Image 1 (cartoon, rainbow, N blue to C red):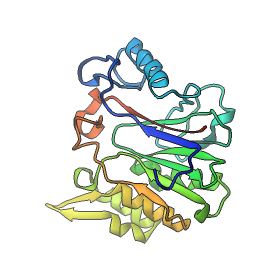
Image 2 (image 1 turned 90 degrees about the horizontal axis):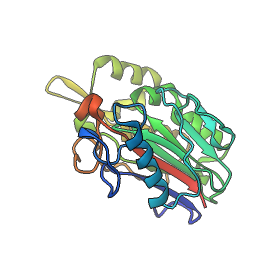
Image 3 (image 1 turned 180 degrees about the vertical axis):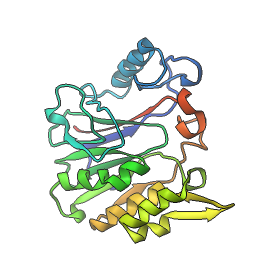
Image 4 (image 1 turned 90 degrees about the vertical axis):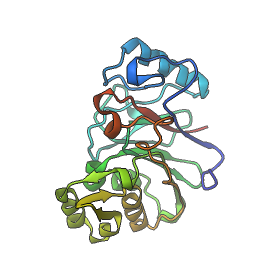
Length: 238
């Protein structure tokens, strides 16, 4: 990615990868243990993930709860409740899992610190992006961001109460909503950009995919419900 330093690596998996095998709608590269997939299939897929992408270590997984909690991945010994993690240490792989929510990758421009957040509509208004950015203790012009694959506005119908919560947080979110056929639709990508721009972060890439529409590439909870697997989004310092 043009904005990111050469010593920083990040990736988003897709739904299919040769070698991984899961069941039913989970085929074939689901990486989440908390869905109704076979545990042995997920473990196999995670091993394939490590070898296929030549990861420097096993990803530091977190128990995502749509919160604003951000943790230092270098200090985690057991899985903790959080929705974002960061590290300043090389070889530590920060990871989140999604199936419509927005993965937000962040790096210092000098490659000395990286992090990633799992951002759904709840996490966004609760402040998970803000907490991740604040953990960098850096001016916005020293940071770069990539927005990974998420559900697009045209596929993300939300209720009036969701829009109200967003506008009560920041009136600028008005631009992130559309209204047609008596329904509200939310642009998670744009809402994330509003927060990032508030930190004076303008080196932003991504934001042009749709997990719901691109069925051949991505899992989607909105599309597949409880039978949806999860993609992994990983970032680390070489």
